[in-house]
Length: 204
View 1 (tube, rainbow, N blue to C red):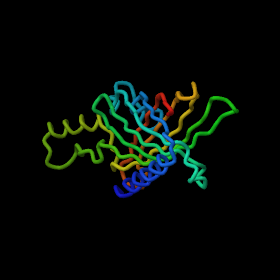
View 2 (cartoon, rainbow, N blue to C red):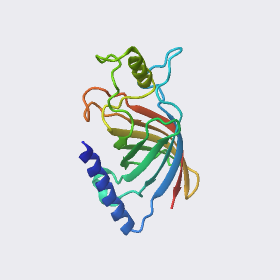
View 3 (cartoon, helix red, strand yellow):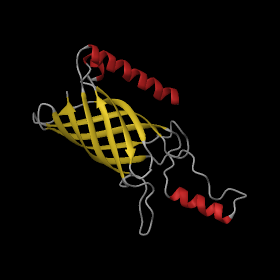
């Protein structure tokens, strides 16, 4: 499955090369996101410890709309990194996005879909494994209660943003990003991760 992600990244690299040769510069963005929001997935009860916390910094690049992919609706290609400030799971994503204008205004939607690679846990150690001492079992339980189990480092990465063009060069977006293996890259654990926040975009 790692080759699937590498193939996707290679394809995006080729798209960016075509974009650059056409003289278009695209745009860069940076944002701050809540890490592992819980309105999808795990429910946090009274006294429970949230597994992975803090904020994520997203920074990345998007091409202009690619006319040669007219048969796909002229998407933008994107790539970004998500770094957590509490030693939680980081991830790196690449994919395609489609900006859609709303009501002939400065507002727009931007759905996207891509692949991601996470450095998070993919096989948490079972605390009930035979041969463990009580101290080892407790240590594993504590470790597991603070970490997500992604099942596989390769993840799907759908996202959705609501944006507003502030000027010719600047835009702002509220966005939601999700990563999970979809029980395709791995059969078993699939806890996934949800990020929600805002980002600022500068178009060259």
